[in-house]
Image 1 (cartoon, rainbow, N blue to C red):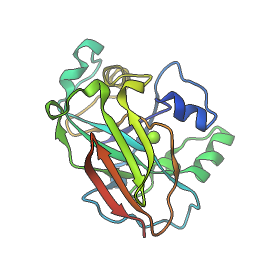
Image 2: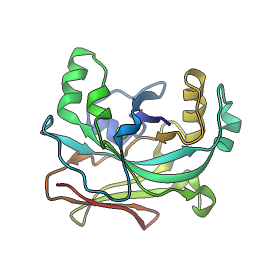
Image 3: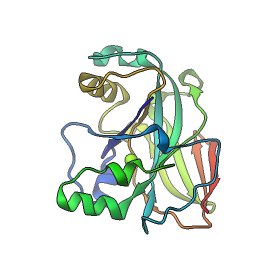
Image 4: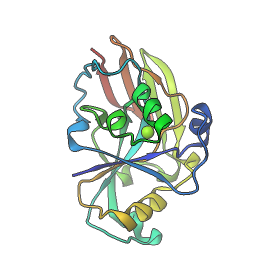
Amino acid sequence: MKIIGIGRNYIDHIKELNNEKPTEPVIFIKPDTSLLRDNAPFYYPKFSNEIHYEVEVVLKISKEGKHIAEEFAGKYYNEIGLGIDLTARDLQAKAKEKGLPWTLAKGFDHSAVISSFFDKGELPNIDTINFELHKNGEVKQNGNTKDMIFSFKKIISYISKYITLKKGDLIFTGTPKGVGALEIGNHIECFLENKKVISFNVK
Ligand code: MG
């Protein structure tokens, strides 16, 4: 399986990092070794001094598809969860400066924290999903999928023009504003429509 991330999909987050609003989705990939599941602790790596959390809605692809038309894209995922696209912001800043890829900043081990997945039918409305990240009990990010620049359907259709999507692939759909640094000792919790779905410690 592969993990595909979308960058710059919420206007308020683009502004906080002084990025430009994209005209097409910004795509990157994390390897399968980046997964961190089951609320396991995250061990802060030595190569970065600035790891940021980015809570995101994650789609799980349910069948193989290529060149998926937007109107049919909804048939390619049945389950939704939350994830945290952990980003070594210091490494990313260096890469950006030189116009180099973000691979190490986004793809290091355990940089893709994920929750359990839920049938999309369990959510009241997938176009207006509320989600939050709390650090040490304080709300740091509060987003809603209605504020996405590129919809789930658009993202699936766009990616599948270039990369075949396969059953089990995960798509991180972008983060709202409020990203910030993780520190050793932090307790992180994420909520999908008020249901706690992620809870782990930074060690
Ligand atoms: Mg992200």
